[in-house]
Figure 1 (cartoon, one colour):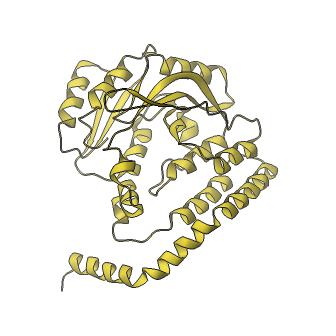
Figure 2: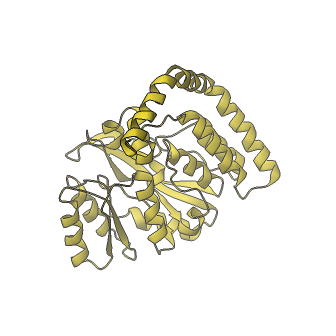
Length: 297
């Protein structure tokens, strides 16, 4: 989290109240300047399962997400945002699935969008995709029928997750990760609605609406640099397929689905190239200005 004081206490309490209790709760604070550190330290002092990790500067969302994977120690792993909450049975239901089904790489539950006060806004329909035995058909589901990515907050196998590229420092990198997980196993959804996804004005998707601000949220190093979000996703999808532990036949079928994805997104891909040409002079001036500010004569 970063500056998560508004909903943080509720989020932590919902996790500590899980009826499955054998877990560690690692809180990764990305340089918060509000009361977040005090809240986290309060819980860490009272529950031995809580580990508080703090960076003194904001190093971007991608770095913060991946940091948690590297310092975690459990057999299973899940990300949890500071503004979301969970019903007490979330972990136990997901753990039981992964314990019993080695073919499942990701277990998630039904999700509900809630407002600032916890009131129900939207009940998400069942996400019945990426459950086929064939890796290429799961990949097809992920690429050609994109979801809201709420399953990224499900439970996964930590060692399996470590074989992926994790969260990349670019926009929509969670989609690449979901593709990688689908290439490693089936997805399973517990139908009960045990995940409460908070919708509020301070969410990153609302605060960082422009493509430029969004990519800088993932990684501050993008400041002043031009990017091709759709092209980057295309390249990363290709890399995910190339490193997947699948047969040659399955890989070829995945590439065929990627070609279909490219065709359906060709208009956006062309627009990104046109935008680069259009704004080339402006970008060049911004780059020179940045260089002069960093290295004044």
